[in-house]
Image (tube, rainbow, N blue to C red; front, side, top):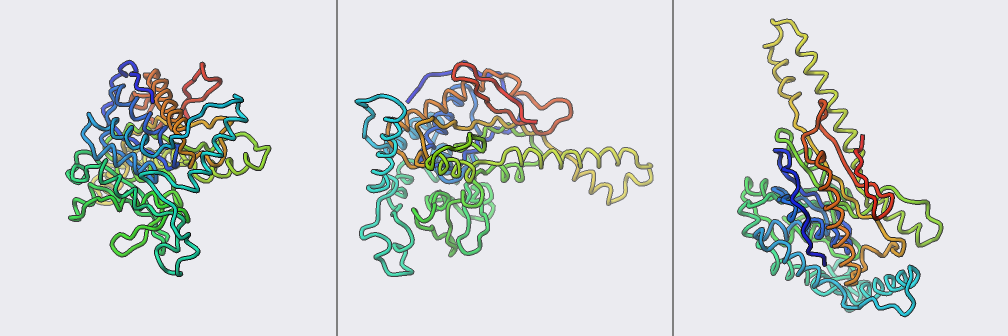
Length: 392
């Protein structure tokens, strides 16, 4: 895994720094590499929010001293990556694709050390209604891994804000487990909350918390961006959103490509939708402020006007959006191909994309021209010619 440092970034805007991590299984090492590069660039998040594998990475980050975070992430990704090496007799994308599919098949058969193990006997042979009958794998190894790698006392001492999302199995309602909110309620974040966020059925079993069964938050929404925007409406935000599936892609020409494209669309974030919604709200608030300014003096102190004045106040949001770009030799199994070569590739890709993003000084400035939310991402013409683009 690449440990190279980037040049120090321009001093970011005076805003709360947030790291938002999407779900995506084995692709999550891309987020770890991105975090390593962010730290090297002087970006220390005050708040991490994640779903599924993003929740695991978030817990490792929030649950460790700053000096240990990258090492703990490396320990986790080295633990869960398969030792099978890539040493092809016949090089090329087709050979690599075959290697990836074989690696993913082995993972599906034997599980991942420190993460999940296949049920023996298999789930269909267990009595209906038993916990073992509802998932192909047992995630007990993950609980031990989290207890080893994450200091939950640190999380509950609010050294850094942590938010992870899950969905109720019977209610269908989305739920965020947030250490700041839990502190107010006298509750504590534990391994079960992180596991609930990553309990993707039918592979993994639901996790019971306070009598409710929870599944992977990615079933309902694979990014916590909405939660962050809803929770913080007064302080300015500088958000690095690291996604593992791209909403945009080429038209598939094979069955495997169609399966991959479907998964990308299903789990991709709707950042453009969030941006458009935020702009609509912004325009409405601007109109309210403008209208209040035109009111006659005798109405300006009316209680209803004061309520509208408070409601029209808003913060500014800058989102630097990083999206993992799939290689031609990857397919729909990319999120459960835990081969070491794949983990290292994804890690290095995340670090590279952050280094490129940090070259754009304007991305770290406060939005201008009256804008309250801007989103930037990397658009690739080729590997050597990145170009930052602003989403309007």
